[in-house]
Length: 365
Ligand SMILES: NC(=O)c1ccc[n+]([C@@H]2O[C@H](COP(=O)([O-])OP(=O)(O)OC[C@H]3O[C@@H](n4cnc5c(N)ncnc54)[C@H](O)[C@@H]3O)[C@@H](O)[C@H]2O)c1
Image 1 (tube, rainbow, N blue to C red):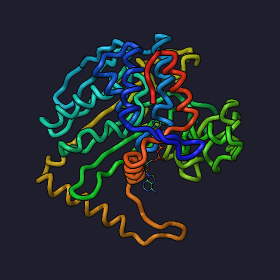
Image 2 (cartoon, rainbow, N blue to C red; image 1 turned 180 degrees about the vertical axis):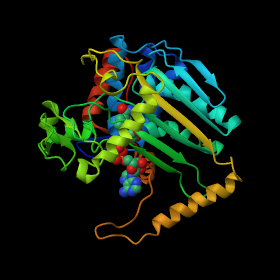
Image 3 (tube, helix red, strand yellow; image 1 turned 135 degrees about the vertical axis):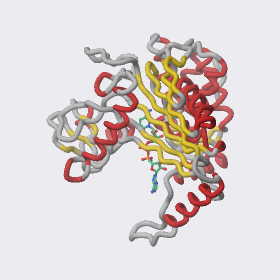
Image 4 (spheres, helix red, strand yellow; image 1 turned 90 degrees about the vertical axis):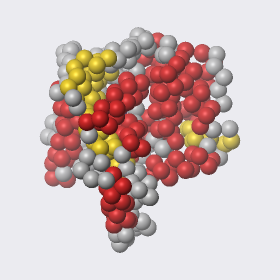
């Protein structure tokens, strides 16, 4: 470990993976799933998505301790159509259930040209892009999405009715790096609002509303009955389209397969109160894979993806920008930086992991 600043510490990827795997094992998760779950979380930190990496390890552990997640879950296929399956996640760890459903979808897509796996009765699955990327080596475009506990107001509404419902897609390429679209459908993340509150700064305009449904830049308003705005903000800034995207994810992951949806999605906090109305089963996900070889030689399609990338990159840059990036570039740069300097962890996260290591008697660092 070496410290590069007061705030950020750097760790070898293997150290973090071993530690997270052991925490999941001690929480009762079987070896294979524990390693799988640790891989998703550590990948988030390597990609620079700190809000969904080891910063969440403590929450997962608490969820097990409080019996909110079934550590011994055995997800199973409950409906099987040629290119569509429904999986019951057995209230298991979303990070492992998501990986299980992804493997199923990939195997079937290799046979059928495409396959989609819906999941009900699952939990928080971390970064959607991790799952979407798993089919790249097999010439598959990947899609992954999940609904999440409500934080977002529908356009024109007061209060939280939808999650930040992330949506991801990954595209294979020839010589260029893969394309990775991986985004929440809210204007801003909960983590950014928490940071702004801690640092005493204001939020960008059109990112949250207060308890009366009025746009606000004061982070405190979110925690006093407010809500995040959908991607795009309010109606006349295009927020209705972010609302439509969040609705798409919620309908595909929740209302369609029979998982919970909207305000009824179970919380990811041990002390949060469940909604009075119980609707559907747990968190829902959807994973889909499409063979790029379905219509022509996959090598030709990969080259066309490269051409698309090069065309975007060749855009003339606008004032204030020094380059046009491709979706997935920031994660690629962060991964290279993590590989060279170690995976970054905030000091507060490091201290939380130290406390967890003492509690469980696991070596860390
Ligand atoms: N499971 C959950 O509850 C949950 C909820 C919300 C988000 N998430 C995850 O959190 C992560 C972060 O989401 P986010 O919305 O904050 O992501 P973000 O805003 O950092 O990035 C969104 C997308 O934009 C791309 N991008 C960023 N800058 C770009 C640029 N200048 N040009 C082109 N593309 C660019 C990124 O590569 C990424 O594909 C994702 O992995 C998401 O899956 C998970």
